[in-house]
Image 1 (cartoon, rainbow, N blue to C red):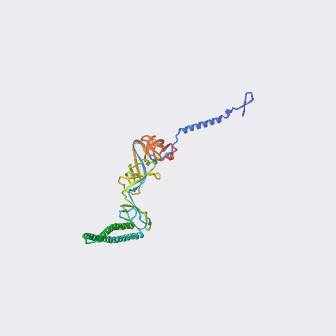
Image 2: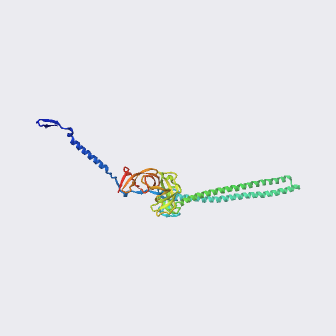
Amino acid sequence: MWHALRWAGGVDIPIQRSRLARYRGWIVAAALVGVSLALTTVALGSLSVEPPAVAQAGLWIGAVERGEMLLAVQGNGRLVPEHIQWITALSAARVEKIHVRPGAAVEADTVVLELGNPDLELQALEGERQVVAARAALAELRATLRNERLTQKSTVATLKIDHASARRRADANAQLGGGGYLSDDDQRTARAQLEALEVRVGIEGERLAALEENLQRRLSAQEAQIASLETIARTRRAQVEALKVRAGVAGVLQELPLEPGQWVNPGGLLAKVARPDRLKARLQIPETLAKDVALGQPARIDTRNGVVDGVVERIDPAASGGTVTVDVALTGALPKGARPDLHVVGTVELDRLPDVLHVRRPAYAQPDATLGVFRVDADERYATRVNVEFGRASATTIEVLAGLAEGDRVVLSDMSTHDARDRLKLE
Protein backbone atom coordinates (compact mmCIF):
# COMPACT_ATOMS: atom_id res chain seq x y z
CA MET A 1 0.00 0.00 0.00
CA TRP A 2 1.30 3.34 -0.80
CA HIS A 3 0.80 6.51 1.23
CA ALA A 4 1.66 10.12 0.24
CA LEU A 5 3.57 12.47 2.51
CA ARG A 6 3.18 16.13 2.00
CA TRP A 7 6.28 18.29 2.42
CA ALA A 8 6.38 21.98 3.05
CA GLY A 9 6.99 22.69 -0.55
CA GLY A 10 3.61 21.23 -1.31
CA VAL A 11 4.92 18.19 -3.15
CA ASP A 12 3.45 14.72 -2.24
CA ILE A 13 6.13 11.94 -1.83
CA PRO A 14 4.80 8.31 -1.88
CA ILE A 15 6.43 5.83 0.66
CA GLN A 16 5.88 1.95 1.34
CA ARG A 17 4.67 0.83 4.89
CA SER A 18 6.95 -1.64 6.78
CA ARG A 19 5.96 -5.40 6.62
CA LEU A 20 6.66 -5.81 10.34
CA ALA A 21 4.17 -3.14 11.16
CA ARG A 22 1.81 -4.74 8.79
CA TYR A 23 1.73 -8.16 10.74
CA ARG A 24 2.30 -6.78 14.19
CA GLY A 25 -1.29 -7.42 15.31
CA TRP A 26 -1.25 -11.05 14.29
CA ILE A 27 2.04 -11.67 16.07
CA VAL A 28 0.79 -10.13 19.29
CA ALA A 29 -2.38 -12.25 19.18
CA ALA A 30 -0.42 -15.46 18.59
CA ALA A 31 1.91 -14.66 21.46
CA LEU A 32 -0.99 -14.11 23.80
CA VAL A 33 -2.56 -17.46 22.83
CA GLY A 34 0.76 -19.31 23.39
CA VAL A 35 1.24 -17.76 26.80
CA SER A 36 -2.29 -18.73 27.75
CA LEU A 37 -1.74 -22.33 26.66
CA ALA A 38 1.50 -22.57 28.58
CA LEU A 39 -0.09 -21.19 31.72
CA THR A 40 -2.97 -23.66 31.38
CA THR A 41 -0.61 -26.62 30.95
CA VAL A 42 1.39 -25.60 34.00
CA ALA A 43 -1.77 -25.17 36.00
CA LEU A 44 -3.15 -28.56 34.98
CA GLY A 45 0.19 -30.24 35.59
CA SER A 46 0.29 -28.83 39.09
CA LEU A 47 -3.10 -30.43 39.84
CA SER A 48 -3.15 -34.20 40.90
CA VAL A 49 -5.55 -36.64 39.15
CA GLU A 50 -7.99 -38.12 41.67
CA PRO A 51 -7.84 -42.00 41.63
CA PRO A 52 -11.04 -44.04 41.26
CA ALA A 53 -13.02 -44.59 44.43
CA VAL A 54 -13.77 -48.01 45.95
CA ALA A 55 -16.21 -48.74 48.77
CA GLN A 56 -14.10 -49.81 51.76
CA ALA A 57 -17.05 -51.70 53.25
CA GLY A 58 -16.93 -54.14 50.35
CA LEU A 59 -13.23 -54.92 50.74
CA TRP A 60 -11.57 -57.62 52.79
CA ILE A 61 -8.58 -56.04 54.52
CA GLY A 62 -5.99 -57.89 56.59
CA ALA A 63 -3.03 -56.84 58.72
CA VAL A 64 0.52 -58.13 58.39
CA GLU A 65 1.56 -59.94 61.57
CA ARG A 66 4.72 -61.49 62.97
CA GLY A 67 4.60 -64.71 64.93
CA GLU A 68 3.83 -68.38 64.56
CA MET A 69 2.30 -69.37 61.25
CA LEU A 70 0.36 -72.57 60.73
CA LEU A 71 1.08 -74.38 57.48
CA ALA A 72 -2.04 -76.28 56.46
CA VAL A 73 -3.95 -77.45 53.43
CA GLN A 74 -7.69 -77.36 53.08
CA GLY A 75 -10.18 -79.39 51.14
CA ASN A 76 -13.87 -80.01 50.86
CA GLY A 77 -15.35 -83.40 51.58
CA ARG A 78 -18.10 -85.25 53.37
CA LEU A 79 -18.63 -87.52 56.32
CA VAL A 80 -18.73 -91.22 55.52
CA PRO A 81 -19.35 -94.24 57.78
CA GLU A 82 -16.33 -96.13 59.01
CA HIS A 83 -18.11 -99.37 58.17
CA ILE A 84 -20.87 -99.89 55.62
CA GLN A 85 -22.96 -103.03 55.44
CA TRP A 86 -23.71 -103.62 51.77
CA ILE A 87 -26.68 -105.94 51.41
CA THR A 88 -26.82 -107.70 48.04
CA ALA A 89 -29.13 -110.26 46.50
CA LEU A 90 -28.02 -113.89 46.74
CA SER A 91 -30.32 -114.94 43.91
CA ALA A 92 -32.69 -113.52 41.38
CA ALA A 93 -36.03 -112.53 42.91
CA ARG A 94 -38.86 -110.04 42.87
CA VAL A 95 -39.45 -107.42 45.56
CA GLU A 96 -42.58 -108.43 47.43
CA LYS A 97 -42.69 -106.03 50.36
CA ILE A 98 -40.60 -103.22 51.86
CA HIS A 99 -40.70 -102.99 55.66
CA VAL A 100 -38.17 -100.18 56.35
CA ARG A 101 -37.30 -97.00 54.49
CA PRO A 102 -33.96 -95.10 54.48
CA GLY A 103 -33.32 -93.11 57.63
CA ALA A 104 -34.88 -95.65 59.99
CA ALA A 105 -32.87 -97.25 62.79
CA VAL A 106 -32.44 -101.00 62.41
CA GLU A 107 -31.06 -103.91 64.42
CA ALA A 108 -29.05 -106.79 63.04
CA ASP A 109 -32.12 -109.03 62.71
CA THR A 110 -34.50 -106.37 61.40
CA VAL A 111 -36.25 -107.51 58.21
CA VAL A 112 -35.74 -104.68 55.74
CA LEU A 113 -37.65 -106.13 52.79
CA GLU A 114 -39.03 -109.41 51.47
CA LEU A 115 -38.28 -110.98 48.11
CA GLY A 116 -40.07 -113.76 46.30
CA ASN A 117 -38.94 -116.59 44.01
CA PRO A 118 -41.06 -119.81 43.87
CA ASP A 119 -38.34 -121.67 41.98
CA LEU A 120 -35.99 -121.28 44.96
CA GLU A 121 -38.50 -122.89 47.29
CA LEU A 122 -38.92 -125.83 44.93
CA GLN A 123 -35.16 -126.21 44.62
CA ALA A 124 -34.80 -126.13 48.38
CA LEU A 125 -37.44 -128.83 48.81
CA GLU A 126 -35.82 -130.97 46.12
CA GLY A 127 -32.45 -130.61 47.81
CA GLU A 128 -33.89 -131.67 51.15
CA ARG A 129 -35.64 -134.67 49.48
CA GLN A 130 -32.34 -135.78 47.97
CA VAL A 131 -30.71 -135.65 51.38
CA VAL A 132 -33.44 -137.80 52.89
CA ALA A 133 -33.12 -140.29 50.03
CA ALA A 134 -29.35 -140.43 50.38
CA ARG A 135 -29.60 -141.06 54.11
CA ALA A 136 -32.04 -143.89 53.48
CA ALA A 137 -29.67 -145.34 50.90
CA LEU A 138 -26.86 -145.13 53.43
CA ALA A 139 -28.89 -147.02 56.00
CA GLU A 140 -29.74 -149.70 53.44
CA LEU A 141 -26.11 -149.93 52.38
CA ARG A 142 -24.99 -150.39 55.95
CA ALA A 143 -27.48 -153.22 56.41
CA THR A 144 -26.36 -154.92 53.18
CA LEU A 145 -22.70 -154.55 54.02
CA ARG A 146 -23.30 -155.85 57.53
CA ASN A 147 -24.91 -159.01 56.08
CA GLU A 148 -22.02 -159.47 53.66
CA ARG A 149 -19.53 -159.07 56.47
CA LEU A 150 -21.38 -161.53 58.69
CA THR A 151 -21.62 -164.05 55.86
CA GLN A 152 -17.89 -163.86 55.25
CA LYS A 153 -17.13 -164.11 58.93
CA SER A 154 -19.34 -167.20 59.12
CA THR A 155 -17.45 -168.75 56.21
CA VAL A 156 -14.12 -168.08 57.87
CA ALA A 157 -15.36 -169.46 61.18
CA THR A 158 -16.65 -172.67 59.50
CA LEU A 159 -13.35 -173.19 57.75
CA LYS A 160 -11.47 -172.73 60.97
CA ILE A 161 -13.63 -175.41 62.62
CA ASP A 162 -13.06 -177.74 59.68
CA HIS A 163 -9.37 -176.99 59.84
CA ALA A 164 -9.24 -177.85 63.54
CA SER A 165 -11.10 -181.12 62.91
CA ALA A 166 -8.77 -182.00 60.07
CA ARG A 167 -5.76 -181.36 62.27
CA ARG A 168 -7.09 -183.67 64.96
CA ARG A 169 -7.78 -186.34 62.36
CA ALA A 170 -4.35 -185.99 60.86
CA ASP A 171 -2.71 -186.27 64.27
CA ALA A 172 -4.80 -189.31 65.14
CA ASN A 173 -4.01 -190.95 61.82
CA ALA A 174 -0.35 -190.30 62.37
CA GLN A 175 -0.49 -192.11 65.72
CA LEU A 176 -2.42 -195.01 64.24
CA GLY A 177 -0.07 -195.21 61.31
CA GLY A 178 2.90 -195.29 63.65
CA GLY A 179 1.38 -198.33 65.40
CA GLY A 180 0.76 -200.04 62.11
CA TYR A 181 -2.99 -199.70 62.35
CA LEU A 182 -3.41 -197.26 59.41
CA SER A 183 -1.95 -197.27 55.99
CA ASP A 184 0.37 -194.60 54.70
CA ASP A 185 -2.17 -193.63 52.03
CA ASP A 186 -4.79 -192.76 54.63
CA GLN A 187 -2.24 -190.67 56.51
CA ARG A 188 -1.29 -188.76 53.41
CA THR A 189 -4.96 -188.13 52.61
CA ALA A 190 -5.60 -186.72 56.08
CA ARG A 191 -2.51 -184.52 55.82
CA ALA A 192 -3.58 -183.19 52.38
CA GLN A 193 -7.04 -182.34 53.67
CA LEU A 194 -5.44 -180.43 56.57
CA GLU A 195 -3.17 -178.48 54.26
CA ALA A 196 -6.06 -177.63 51.92
CA LEU A 197 -8.13 -176.31 54.80
CA GLU A 198 -5.17 -174.24 56.00
CA VAL A 199 -4.99 -172.56 52.56
CA ARG A 200 -8.72 -171.96 52.45
CA VAL A 201 -8.69 -170.44 55.93
CA GLY A 202 -5.93 -168.02 54.83
CA ILE A 203 -7.72 -167.09 51.64
CA GLU A 204 -11.08 -166.52 53.29
CA GLY A 205 -9.37 -164.47 56.03
CA GLU A 206 -7.82 -162.22 53.43
CA ARG A 207 -11.18 -161.98 51.68
CA LEU A 208 -12.78 -160.90 54.94
CA ALA A 209 -10.14 -158.17 55.45
CA ALA A 210 -10.62 -156.94 51.86
CA LEU A 211 -14.37 -156.96 52.36
CA GLU A 212 -14.03 -154.89 55.50
CA GLU A 213 -11.89 -152.32 53.65
CA ASN A 214 -14.26 -152.24 50.69
CA LEU A 215 -17.27 -151.85 52.93
CA GLN A 216 -15.68 -148.86 54.64
CA ARG A 217 -14.91 -147.20 51.31
CA ARG A 218 -18.49 -147.64 50.13
CA LEU A 219 -19.82 -146.20 53.39
CA SER A 220 -17.41 -143.24 53.17
CA ALA A 221 -18.47 -142.53 49.59
CA GLN A 222 -22.13 -142.57 50.53
CA GLU A 223 -21.51 -140.35 53.57
CA ALA A 224 -19.56 -137.90 51.40
CA GLN A 225 -22.46 -137.80 48.95
CA ILE A 226 -24.83 -137.07 51.81
CA ALA A 227 -22.57 -134.29 53.07
CA SER A 228 -22.52 -132.76 49.60
CA LEU A 229 -26.29 -133.00 49.27
CA GLU A 230 -26.71 -131.49 52.73
CA THR A 231 -24.51 -128.54 51.73
CA ILE A 232 -26.55 -128.00 48.60
CA ALA A 233 -29.77 -128.25 50.56
CA ARG A 234 -28.54 -125.81 53.20
CA THR A 235 -27.44 -123.37 50.49
CA ARG A 236 -30.81 -123.55 48.79
CA ARG A 237 -32.62 -123.19 52.09
CA ALA A 238 -30.38 -120.22 52.96
CA GLN A 239 -31.32 -118.66 49.63
CA VAL A 240 -34.96 -119.04 50.55
CA GLU A 241 -34.35 -117.60 54.02
CA ALA A 242 -32.39 -114.76 52.42
CA LEU A 243 -35.52 -113.69 50.61
CA LYS A 244 -36.33 -112.09 53.96
CA VAL A 245 -33.57 -109.51 53.77
CA ARG A 246 -32.20 -108.53 57.19
CA ALA A 247 -30.03 -105.54 58.11
CA GLY A 248 -27.13 -107.65 59.37
CA VAL A 249 -25.80 -104.92 61.68
CA ALA A 250 -27.28 -102.36 64.02
CA GLY A 251 -27.35 -98.87 62.55
CA VAL A 252 -29.34 -96.65 60.22
CA LEU A 253 -30.63 -97.68 56.83
CA GLN A 254 -28.82 -95.40 54.39
CA GLU A 255 -30.09 -96.56 51.04
CA LEU A 256 -32.79 -98.82 49.59
CA PRO A 257 -33.11 -98.19 45.83
CA LEU A 258 -36.00 -100.59 45.23
CA GLU A 259 -39.78 -100.59 44.89
CA PRO A 260 -42.31 -103.43 45.21
CA GLY A 261 -42.55 -105.50 42.03
CA GLN A 262 -39.01 -104.70 40.93
CA TRP A 263 -36.83 -107.62 39.81
CA VAL A 264 -33.32 -107.96 41.21
CA ASN A 265 -30.43 -110.05 39.92
CA PRO A 266 -27.84 -111.98 41.93
CA GLY A 267 -25.28 -109.55 43.37
CA GLY A 268 -27.56 -106.54 42.91
CA LEU A 269 -27.59 -103.91 45.65
CA LEU A 270 -30.59 -104.18 47.94
CA ALA A 271 -29.73 -101.83 50.80
CA LYS A 272 -26.93 -100.07 52.67
CA VAL A 273 -26.71 -99.88 56.47
CA ALA A 274 -24.21 -97.82 58.47
CA ARG A 275 -23.61 -96.79 62.05
CA PRO A 276 -24.21 -93.03 62.35
CA ASP A 277 -22.01 -92.72 65.44
CA ARG A 278 -18.91 -94.11 63.69
CA LEU A 279 -18.01 -91.61 60.97
CA LYS A 280 -14.87 -90.33 59.32
CA ALA A 281 -14.17 -87.42 57.00
CA ARG A 282 -13.25 -88.05 53.37
CA LEU A 283 -11.56 -84.94 51.96
CA GLN A 284 -10.61 -83.97 48.41
CA ILE A 285 -7.26 -82.15 48.63
CA PRO A 286 -5.95 -80.41 45.47
CA GLU A 287 -3.16 -82.50 44.05
CA THR A 288 -0.77 -79.53 44.03
CA LEU A 289 -1.18 -79.19 47.81
CA ALA A 290 -1.40 -82.86 48.78
CA LYS A 291 2.31 -83.56 48.29
CA ASP A 292 3.09 -82.64 51.91
CA VAL A 293 0.17 -84.51 53.49
CA ALA A 294 1.30 -87.54 55.52
CA LEU A 295 -0.29 -90.19 57.70
CA GLY A 296 -0.74 -89.21 61.32
CA GLN A 297 -0.93 -85.45 60.72
CA PRO A 298 -3.55 -83.64 62.84
CA ALA A 299 -6.62 -82.25 61.14
CA ARG A 300 -9.74 -80.25 61.97
CA ILE A 301 -13.10 -80.91 60.36
CA ASP A 302 -15.68 -78.12 60.16
CA THR A 303 -19.22 -79.51 59.90
CA ARG A 304 -20.87 -76.06 59.93
CA ASN A 305 -22.38 -77.06 63.28
CA GLY A 306 -19.06 -77.45 65.03
CA VAL A 307 -15.41 -78.39 64.61
CA VAL A 308 -14.03 -81.81 65.51
CA ASP A 309 -10.40 -82.91 65.72
CA GLY A 310 -9.03 -85.80 63.72
CA VAL A 311 -5.93 -87.44 62.31
CA VAL A 312 -5.03 -88.47 58.75
CA GLU A 313 -5.45 -92.26 58.47
CA ARG A 314 -5.37 -92.90 54.72
CA ILE A 315 -4.12 -91.17 51.56
CA ASP A 316 -5.12 -92.33 48.10
CA PRO A 317 -2.02 -93.43 46.18
CA ALA A 318 -3.23 -91.76 42.98
CA ALA A 319 -4.89 -88.45 42.12
CA SER A 320 -8.26 -88.34 40.40
CA GLY A 321 -9.85 -85.31 38.79
CA GLY A 322 -7.14 -82.98 40.08
CA THR A 323 -7.57 -84.00 43.74
CA VAL A 324 -6.25 -86.61 46.15
CA THR A 325 -8.65 -88.37 48.51
CA VAL A 326 -7.60 -88.18 52.17
CA ASP A 327 -9.46 -89.99 54.97
CA VAL A 328 -9.43 -88.40 58.42
CA ALA A 329 -10.33 -90.44 61.50
CA LEU A 330 -12.32 -88.31 63.93
CA THR A 331 -10.88 -88.37 67.45
CA GLY A 332 -13.29 -85.90 69.04
CA ALA A 333 -16.98 -86.06 69.75
CA LEU A 334 -19.20 -85.60 66.73
CA PRO A 335 -21.05 -82.25 66.62
CA LYS A 336 -24.81 -82.20 66.72
CA GLY A 337 -26.35 -82.98 63.36
CA ALA A 338 -23.38 -84.94 62.03
CA ARG A 339 -24.55 -87.68 59.69
CA PRO A 340 -23.26 -89.61 56.66
CA ASP A 341 -22.81 -87.62 53.43
CA LEU A 342 -22.79 -84.31 55.34
CA HIS A 343 -20.58 -81.81 53.49
CA VAL A 344 -17.59 -80.62 55.51
CA VAL A 345 -14.43 -78.55 55.14
CA GLY A 346 -11.24 -80.10 56.45
CA THR A 347 -7.91 -78.53 57.32
CA VAL A 348 -4.81 -80.73 57.59
CA GLU A 349 -1.96 -79.27 59.67
CA LEU A 350 1.40 -79.71 57.94
CA ASP A 351 3.82 -77.68 60.09
CA ARG A 352 4.17 -74.64 62.37
CA LEU A 353 6.63 -71.86 61.45
CA PRO A 354 7.86 -69.82 64.43
CA ASP A 355 8.40 -66.03 64.21
CA VAL A 356 7.62 -65.32 60.56
CA LEU A 357 5.98 -62.34 58.88
CA HIS A 358 2.63 -63.44 57.47
CA VAL A 359 -0.74 -62.19 56.35
CA ARG A 360 -4.09 -63.63 55.43
CA ARG A 361 -3.76 -65.00 51.92
CA PRO A 362 -4.79 -62.42 49.29
CA ALA A 363 -6.70 -63.45 46.21
CA TYR A 364 -4.44 -65.06 43.57
CA ALA A 365 -1.45 -65.13 45.94
CA GLN A 366 0.78 -68.13 45.24
CA PRO A 367 3.69 -69.49 47.27
CA ASP A 368 7.19 -68.42 46.25
CA ALA A 369 5.86 -65.75 43.88
CA THR A 370 5.57 -61.96 43.64
CA LEU A 371 2.20 -60.22 43.46
CA GLY A 372 1.08 -56.63 43.40
CA VAL A 373 -1.31 -55.88 46.29
CA PHE A 374 -2.92 -52.67 47.49
CA ARG A 375 -1.52 -51.45 50.80
CA VAL A 376 -3.76 -49.11 52.78
CA ASP A 377 -2.13 -45.75 53.48
CA ALA A 378 -1.69 -44.48 57.02
CA ASP A 379 -4.64 -42.07 56.68
CA GLU A 380 -6.80 -44.99 55.48
CA ARG A 381 -8.13 -42.80 52.67
CA TYR A 382 -6.10 -44.35 49.87
CA ALA A 383 -4.58 -47.70 48.93
CA THR A 384 -1.36 -47.92 46.90
CA ARG A 385 -0.19 -50.92 44.92
CA VAL A 386 3.08 -52.46 46.11
CA ASN A 387 4.91 -55.54 44.90
CA VAL A 388 5.11 -58.20 47.59
CA GLU A 389 7.33 -61.27 47.58
CA PHE A 390 5.60 -64.26 49.17
CA GLY A 391 7.12 -67.44 50.55
CA ARG A 392 5.48 -70.53 52.00
CA ALA A 393 1.70 -70.62 51.89
CA SER A 394 -1.05 -72.25 53.87
CA ALA A 395 -4.74 -72.62 53.14
CA THR A 396 -5.55 -69.22 54.66
CA THR A 397 -2.21 -67.52 55.35
CA ILE A 398 0.97 -66.86 53.42
CA GLU A 399 4.50 -65.88 54.42
CA VAL A 400 5.73 -62.37 53.51
CA LEU A 401 9.39 -62.21 52.47
CA ALA A 402 9.61 -58.61 51.20
CA GLY A 403 7.46 -55.61 50.31
CA LEU A 404 5.45 -55.31 53.55
CA ALA A 405 6.19 -54.62 57.18
CA GLU A 406 4.53 -55.71 60.39
CA GLY A 407 1.35 -53.75 60.97
CA ASP A 408 0.74 -52.94 57.28
CA ARG A 409 -2.84 -53.37 56.17
CA VAL A 410 -3.47 -54.75 52.71
CA VAL A 411 -6.51 -55.45 50.57
CA LEU A 412 -7.07 -59.22 50.38
CA SER A 413 -10.08 -59.12 48.07
CA ASP A 414 -9.96 -59.84 44.35
CA MET A 415 -8.78 -56.58 42.77
CA SER A 416 -8.29 -57.86 39.24
CA THR A 417 -10.72 -55.22 37.93
CA HIS A 418 -8.19 -52.56 39.00
CA ASP A 419 -5.09 -54.10 37.44
CA ALA A 420 -4.47 -50.88 35.47
CA ARG A 421 -4.53 -48.75 38.65
CA ASP A 422 -1.69 -48.19 41.09
CA ARG A 423 -3.74 -46.17 43.57
CA LEU A 424 -7.32 -46.27 44.80
CA LYS A 425 -9.42 -44.01 46.96
CA LEU A 426 -11.20 -45.70 49.84
CA GLU A 427 -14.67 -44.45 50.71
